[in-house]
Structure formats: C-alpha cells, structure tokens
Image 1 (cartoon, rainbow, N blue to C red):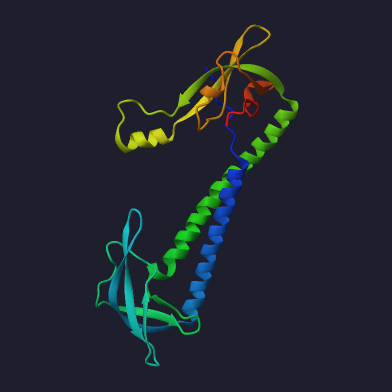
Image 2: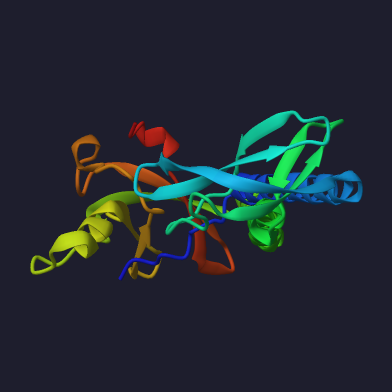
Length: 246
C-alpha cells in the first residue's frame, strides 16, 4: 500500500491565518474602544422607527430599522441602523432610545446588538483565526526545518510511476448536496515504486493533486525522484518539479 505520510502543513498557511486573525482582532478591539468612547460622550433621546429597510445578500434577507429623532436645536435627524435581523427587531412606530454625538456625528440605537455585536463578532472571529494560525505555526516550522534537513541529508531514490490513484470520490449511490460536497473534495495521488537492495518493493505517494497527472506520465516508465529519511523510509518527499505536470 502507498504511504501517505508526506503531507506537510504549509508554513504560509499558518502565517496567513495568524496575520488575518490578529488583524481582525485588532479591528474588533478598535471598534470596542470607539464604542466605549462614544458611550462616554453620547447624548440620549427618544426616537421613532419610521421605516424598516430590507437588505438582501446571496442567501439571506435582513431588515434594518430607520430611526428619526430630534436634537435639542430642533434639527430632525434620520439614520439607518447598521444592525439587521430576520425577523425584524423593530416595527414602524416603535419608540427607541437613541444615542448620538454631535462632534463625531455618530448615532446608534441604545441596544446591545447595535453597539457591541460588530466588535464581538469581528474580534471573536479574529481570535479564532489567530488561534488556528498560531496552533499550526509550530508544526509548520518543524516541518519546514525537517524538509530542509531532508533535502540536504536524505537519500535520493529514482522511483518509477506505478499508477495514479483518485481520492475523495463519491460513491455512485450518493446523491444531492452531500455528493456535490464529496465531488469538490476529489483529487489524485501519483504512486511510484522502487525496489531496494534486498529485492523488496517500496511504494510512495505524492500529496493530493488538484489535477489528473495521467496524461503527463507513463505508467511503469516515468522516473520520479523521492527523497527519503535514511533512518525512516516512511518519511519522504516526492519531487514533482522535474515532471512539469502543470
């Protein structure tokens, strides 16, 4: 059976997850600080919901209350809440408490969802991404160092293509959304073989490929370099660059 142990964790993936997460968490924290500062200076009054606007995306519909209120100078102001929901959180004619700041011209409904939902969601997702990235990073760094060591100290074998193996295909009797999901996960592995000094046959497998390499190789003839750990043939890296598969 082919050995599938050469599945490296990409270092770039761990770094990107961590950077995206930290950036999102930073924006979430800034939004929270801005909200605290707004609450410290905001004036309070009563407003009325005069409309409920529908907002549509690809797969969902939300409703945003439009609020009208009067400032002490008699100026009538109207704003659309940035927080939407389905079903609507307010109806036309509802009385709501409005917070506003004349300096920054920010105005919000005095409700937890309007004030804090954005910072919580953005900050929470950021922390999740950052934790995933930071959890992957040590493993990715170890694997990166190990691959450099392997390329410098490993034993280089000239193996021969033994076959192309499809992976992640859906059973014929699977239908609907689950089958489409399984189809999305399809890929291929290039399987190669090598016979050692004792006559024992060893097989190796590439990481999953997003394309079928069959037209680019000849089964039983095309050579492929595999670099193995001299102390553990189960740890290896298949060099596909020389095949010019893409």
